[in-house]
Length: 275
Length: 275
Image (cartoon, rainbow over all chains, first blue to last red):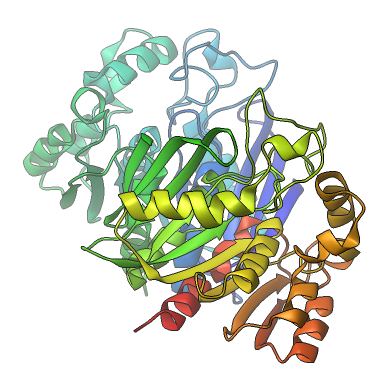
């Protein structure tokens, strides 16, 4: 693991790291914010949305202020494998920058696209080997495609990620265009495979003990066609899953929205992981 | 004036505007953050550094959280005239993105580069015509080249900008390479002209009644060669100017540094402009 950059931020340290991923079979980059103090700290995994990398949350969400206040570490992985040898597509919502936190089974994607295994296994090991995180106190959150990642990784790994929240998540990829396109390409047309990566399907099979927090902007241009939080609300109601969806008038899909409610999310995780 | 974008942020509104500037003789872009509530609000002018625009502070400094909390408006002008017809240089520290908040007297710069007049006259009128700001309660702050702008515009217009602060400012441009290059190009070799735009010279002639706050990162790569806060400290001591320079171990020149102390700056201005 090579540290490529580092900055002091709110008394703690933001650092960026590159390593050769055996899972994704390419170099991968991620960032870690370590709050002031000694640790071990609770660890929050922030999963970004389409086109994003570690930089979007670390530059634009203001998360460091809150992570420093509550004494939590935040790890921001990339959103896909990247590089010249990695399959890609011209569209913003497929290929590099659009890994969808799944293991692709279809060529050409299956060679490198294994973001769920990368995040839940390889990066877990690497992070706890090098940073003062407490593996018994982990949460996961994210935005849009990364909200989908957060919900699905939590539901499939509730003992690892004990707390969960999301900003404007894709909650039912099997039922919306972004998911149709990505899942069709990465997983093929077998809908049973899709269900393994669909929070609204997963929660019916395996609701968790966590309180799920979702914030959604009502002026979000993707709300009606791609996000559809009502589908997840219905599934959670059926499954007895604890869920709070807060709808915010006037807010859109941008990091200005995320920043406005980031403090609430970090607090939500810090309280859930306390003790 | 045309509004090109707008987002809800921390209960208020961030908006971006374009207008044909009669001062700069080209289209100019600026952003305004208006906090929640009715106003009229105190107005803080944030002047950015080399290469920057309205977007850097609005995306990366986290200022909205604090402006919302203290109920102040923030205006972020661009750092120079821009566009195809505007003189430029390949270097990052001259021409577009490097206006230095002065009125250029030398060709080819004198055609468009009048950022001090633009900010203190034309943009004043435009902003108070369109936004709920209180012209009797204005402050100015900025970063690096914009810190130079903040200090000099305050010292020359203390009745307009009653409060002032800066992050890692250029405080003595006549004595450092960035200033030699820019002032030489924009103003020619007459050092008497340079002194009109040099905070360490101006403060000797006309100290203000304000308490000046400066934050400076000790790990800032520009500190020793370009910033030299000790020159301004010496000048303020001689002139009887109230100045606090806080030196922060480990912090560099980036927006991660600015964000870490933005809350203190907004509070500094809000308190100075109260009542």
